[in-house]
Amino acid sequence: MKKILVTIVTLVILSSLAQAQGLGLNGIGAGAGYTTVSFNNSGVSETLPGFAVSAFANFGENMNGFSLYPEIQYFKTSKNFSNAAINSTATWKLSDFAINLNVHYSIPAGETVSTYIGAGIGYNMLSSDVTVSGMLSGSNSTTDSRFGINILGGANINVGKVMALFVEPRYVIASDINHFIIKAGVTFALK
Image (cartoon, rainbow, N blue to C red; front, side):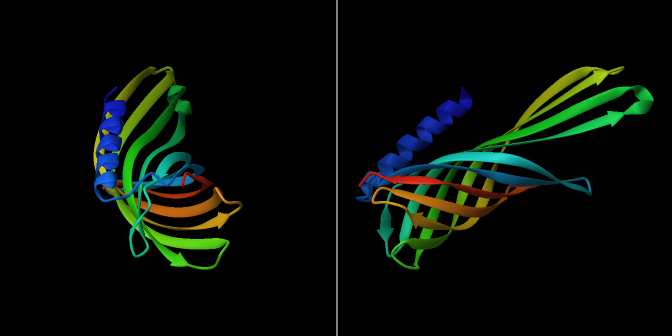
C-alpha cells in the first residue's frame, strides 16, 4: 500500500510540475530487460543476474534538447544455496520497486534514429526474502529503501508516426546495492 501511495503522490507532483512549465504528456512507454545486481557487504562482493521491467511517461522537451521522463521500474533477482552436511537448501530473493525521475538530452542522429544520454534520481524500495527448507527450515523477509542515482543512454528507432522502439543501458548507484540494466521497449507518442 505504501508503494502505491508513494507512486500516486509522485505522479501527481510530476504532472503538476510539467503543466506549470508548459510541458505536457507527450508519450508513454514500457520496457523489459536484463539486470545484474552487485552487492558489497562487509568486504564480500557478488553479482547476480535478474530481470527488469519499467513503465514511463515522456513530458516533452523543456529546453534545447532536455526532456523529462518520470518512470516506475521493478527488478528481481535470486540465488539458491545448499548445504549437504545439514541437508538444507535456501533461496534468497531480492526485488526493487523504484520511482525514478530522469532527464534525457537528445543527440540528433538522423530522421529514423535518435540517441540520448541522461541522468536521474530514484527512490528504491527493496524487499528481501529468504526461505530455508530441509533439516533447518523457516523464512524471513526484510524491506529497505534508499535513494539512487541513474546514469543512462540509449537510442530510439522510429517505426511509424506514433511508435518508436528503444534500447537503453543504465547504471544505478544505490549505496551497497548497485545494478546495471539493459532493456528494450516501445514508446507511443500522444501528441
